[in-house]
View 1 (cartoon, rainbow, N blue to C red):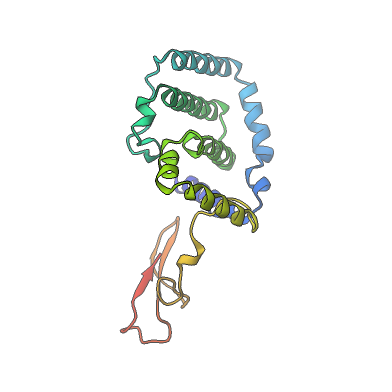
View 2: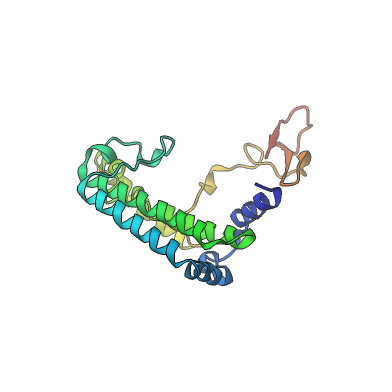
Amino acid sequence: MRTTDLAGSLEAVLTSPAVGTVQRFAPGKAGVRFAAGLARRPRALARNGQQLTGELAKVATGASRLAPSPQDRRFSDQAWRDNPLLRRVLHAYLAGARSADALLADAGLTGGEADRIRFLVENLVEAASPSNNPLINPLAWKAFVDTGGRNAVSGVRNLLGDLRSAPRVPAMVDSTAFEVGANLATTPGEVVLRTELFEGSCRWLSPGRSRSAGFRRCA
């Protein structure tokens, strides 16, 4: 992959939190070209549909051999493999994800348009993961039993708190976990690595003290 392609993908990730939720996921002109690309390839689209239908038929009969990556911790719980219903839900999700990936390839988009559509589709696929549904996630049920339901109450409270402030999506990090001078530096940074794609810098914690007494935090 070229450096410019990597830079385009990185830009999509870094700039997406700065815009509104609707704007972030709006495909715009790239979406029109994505649909047009699929319309110009009806055979590929039909083949994809046939493959998805055939795989879903295997899922229904329990004959599907799809499996998540061993590194995918979302489905590490044994219940996703042992429970017949959860196993079918997982296989159906994997079949849909594979079909979505095939559509991206069949559309024939390149450059920034391909990056934008891939970013949109991959986020939608990840959001649709059955592991995100607390009603069927076995780990969520185990936590519910272990905490006597307190995890559900705290989860709803956290969600409502996230929706009260922009960009009104679930928070990725705990904003209260950072303290200036302890694990967050505000002093001017020093560039320690520069490439075509990014540059890394270090900042000194404890800005009121000498550098020999402080320590660096690099990013």
